[in-house]
Amino acid sequence: MNLSITGHHLDVTPSIREYIHTKMARVLRHFDHVIDTQVMLSVEPHRHRAEITLHVRGKDIHCEAIEENLYASIDLLIDKIDRKVIQHKDRTQNHHHQAVKRQVFETA
Image 1 (tube, rainbow, N blue to C red):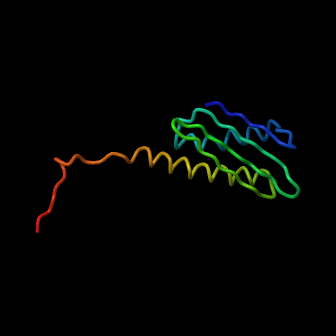
Image 2: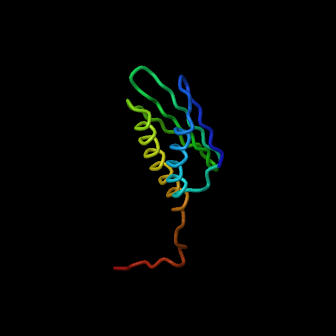
Image 3: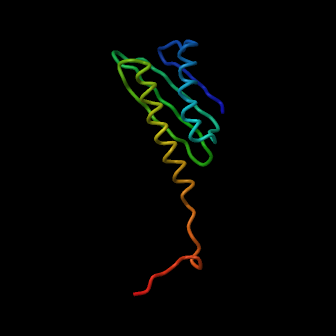
C-alpha cells in the first residue's frame, strides 16, 4: 500500500507521519486490499481538517474530519474511514446466495 501524507499550511513532522501510520494499521487489519492512500492535513483558523482517500479495487473511499486539535481530527478520520471500509468489505463479500435447487420451501 502506498501512503501519501501532505500538509496544507502545515509541516508534516515525523511524529505526525508515524501517528498516521500506526492508526492506519487498524484500517488495514480489517481490509488489506488497499491500493493507494492519500492523506491531506490542513490548518484553518481555530480548526484542523484531515481528509483521506483510499483507492481500492473498483472504488475510491473518501472521508474528512474537522476538529480543534490535529490529533483529534486524525482520530475521528480514522474512525470514519474504518467504518466505511468495513461497510465496503461487507458489501463486496455478502453477494453469496444459496442456489435455488438447494433452497427448502415450506408448503402450508
